[in-house]
Image (tube, rainbow, N blue to C red; front, side):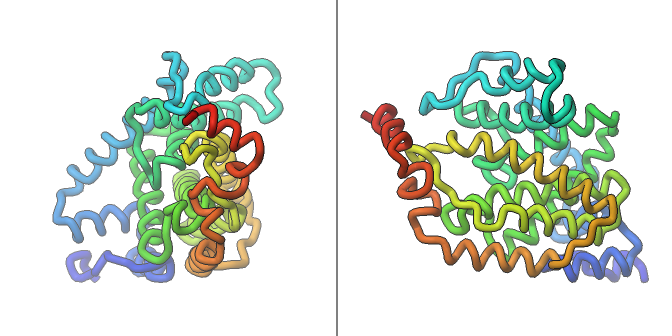
Length: 296
């Protein structure tokens, strides 16, 4: 069947996998053709836009290493430098994972000091994908063309989630933000490291499953604490899920069903645990004291 006769739009993972099987394409290739078909853009324009976003992502992982940044609420500043200072001093997680942690946390320093980031899938979870992508490109000398494939896979997964559930912490808790970001990164890394489309979506399913039920409880209502550390967790989780999947560890729940479960769990969370700063860590004595200190 000629490509011109194929509708490359898809509503869920089942339809995406069907397209990859019908065409013999990767998720990245299907997503690229979807963007061309749905939005009427040439491939070169889609890829140049993605490269622009990726360059912003990479820059946002390094800015806090080169500048002294302070968050608007005063709760963040200097964390990336602290992690990187330990990277070559027998770090518990190894130098590669230390870099992933540092980069993902650094993006939140940029975001909370009103710097330029890519809010993918959200500003609060904006450190996960850049942290994973930048570190793994450096670690394995991956080309920019391959990283554009990673961006396309992440986009496909994010698109499915937003179409069928939510990436909003106010609607679905932190599991919707951080879980989605982690799933996007996990799928992307799995595919560019040699995994099949099915494996990529299995890794994404595992990533969300590992974060199911995570609440959104920002101290003082600011996207600073505990958000920064959860970006490090989301990035680490993505790599863990990619590694398990590539090793052949079975994922038992299909991606679409995991996304639906995440959405239902999010709808079941009380409003105090959905970005209102009325529950969780935000409602602790220490959290309330920090809120009073910030706002008076």
